[in-house]
Image: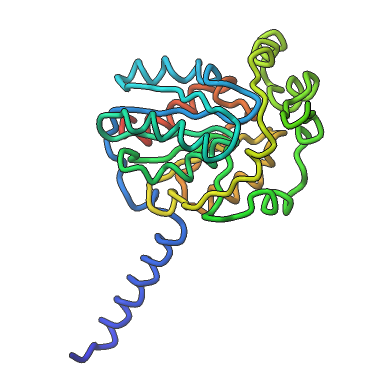
Amino acid sequence: MMMNRRTFSTALLAGAAASLVSSRGIAATTPPVKARNVVLVHGLFADGSCWSEIIPRLQAAGLNVTSVQNPLTTLPDAVASAQRVLDRQDGPTVLVGHSFSGMIVTEVGMHPNVSALVYVAARAPDADEDYTALAKTYPTPPASAGIVFDGDEGRLSEAAFLRDFAGDLPEAKAKVLYAVQQPFHKQLLAGRTSHAAWRSKPSYYAVSTEDRTINPDLERFMAKRMGATTIEVKASHLALISQPDPIARLILDAAGRSE
């Protein structure tokens, strides 16, 4: 069958649009599914309690919320911990990651229960991408100099934690968070994702404009690359604690609960 010029042009544009969606994610083209559950995953220098400001806001909206305790040992271990929680969810689930746990969200977000992904100042690698090499294309954030190791276990020094990780929190509150900081294993940083869930799931990203742990311009690059629905929050790396309202609203948007 012959194709006239107008039909050909329409097909060409449609193909280009499909290619763009495939390469950058589908947040802008897919309306949010109304989710019943939210699963939260923490990153380095923290534990599951770092979501304590977000959890009650989501529960007040009628959502079932679970905060994963990331073992911070290896990427496969961390992915497995999130996988087990996702397996227990009944119905559509928004998967949310902060900081390093964006690696986990990117990998385990392929789970059939996951309806949307939310990245909060988080890593968002492509499949098999060397995130460390990507990060090195941007100025090194100050917090990196504050990591200290005891053998294979790494953590942030107190000075770096207060200044570069939780810089916009009251010192007393930041010290409480420092007290529950969990060390990570060196092997965790060597892991690479084998999938990029943001290529097939609606994605949302909160950029922390005052971030001293991940370069804000790197965050903007990753959000743009995935085609994420993006907000910018004037906050440190811990926007989930210092600015919980906009972060909770973004998660509610991803859950189809923005009304």
